[in-house]
Image: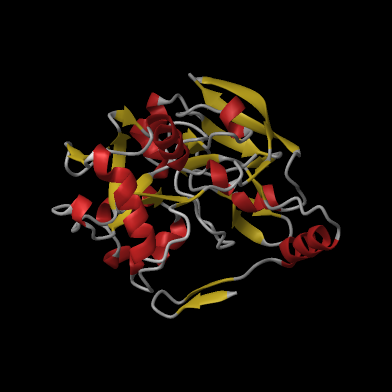
Length: 297
């Protein structure tokens, strides 16, 4: 339960959702909360409705994108218009009439009386034709998100090369800025977090960042860089910390780093890199300059 004093809007969690959660949690393995797996927006503009050949009055929401790895990714397309889900008509603002609670947003349909793995029918308008697809409900896999939330506060993988501390961007990293994190955090990182669907390129795509630079003679001139997005290592594009580990192991270290904000390679002296890493480990009391957990399944 929550209440916003500014808007005077309260949010309550319906009892069937709580009952389902408790039943699931008390009967392991925990299945999780089902999700439909797509992003959407209301469809109220008459011109847009006409362009998409939606004739049903005051019905339908527009699919913007699907989340990789979910059931929606297999059966829905951008610009599909969803008219009904699980046998309930969806209006142009995303509401349906619930027999117990009245007018509710359609995501409640997914969570009510369903579990991950269930299949629900969906009526869609695609290319002007009304058709029906079977949508398999999924559970949100944090690892597949471009910017994982890491709500469990698991230790993150990292790599330190020449004082460059690299890790993947996560929701908890941004929220570490405090209650005003949306205004205090780096705007480039916030853009990736808030607009993930625009940047996601696959289930293994993440955002590698240079979180800080530990001062050392090898990185003089680079020590002001912080919270920068890394696009290339040793001239090779990267999409996460796994690429950083692979390149470092293959090349015997990271000597070239390209940042999104700079578009030029930051170069470290490869001949001095091994000695610099030993010096950094001792000076900063870091037993290991990398942490690599087992890959998520």
